[in-house]
Length: 278
Image 1 (cartoon, rainbow, N blue to C red):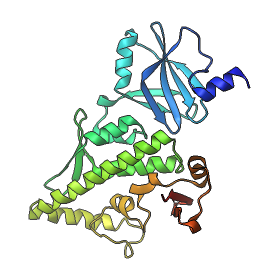
Image 2: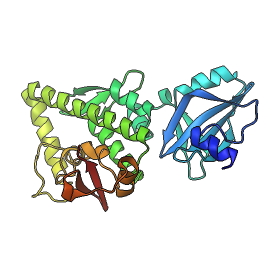
Image 3: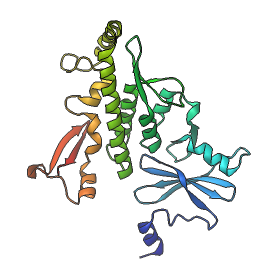
Image 4: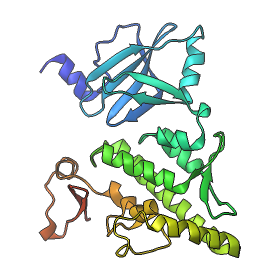
């Protein structure tokens, strides 16, 4: 076996064709749609590196413009940034505190940075019945539904397949979003009559957006809330506990067998997914 293959197997970052003077920084790092983004430092020069997280393949290396700043200053700047990856694996870094809360959510991925945002979120309800969150350090506010909607969007963008890191992050995200919804439910029940009345008006308008108006249960839900918690049993809040057939085989060393009771299936969109039953 070639030396490069052995090194790639033992450590996906060990053989990337880098110069001896180039050093891969431990932090910051991001994972976006199964691609890992790392920062390379060569003295005072910085590059970004895009790697296929599954096989360690080097996909792209590009220069980071320091704008006359030191490498240390740029790295600290990047730690507070969100990477945007295009189809050619070019990376554009967006500073988080330049975005308002809602926009920050919309550009987030299944990363620890998004998990940190969700963990720091504080729920509240306006006098007019708007259920929202604020995040320390970010301007403005966003609905709790915005968090759930972004996770649903990312899950569909991944075609229901994730790295182990993304799956673990997704599980933690889902739990925290559930806690925010639960806390908001309690707050709404304790709110005054006018707030509950205005909330009811909002939901009445929202209910006409549903594809199956007369069939959808829980009329107190918004469309996103219903899709997150119910949607005819899909329950996107549990989606990270389910695997595609191939990922199930990879992680559990066997194909799912529902007849034995060791697996349970559920269909999300056109995908049949499976949960391992211990």
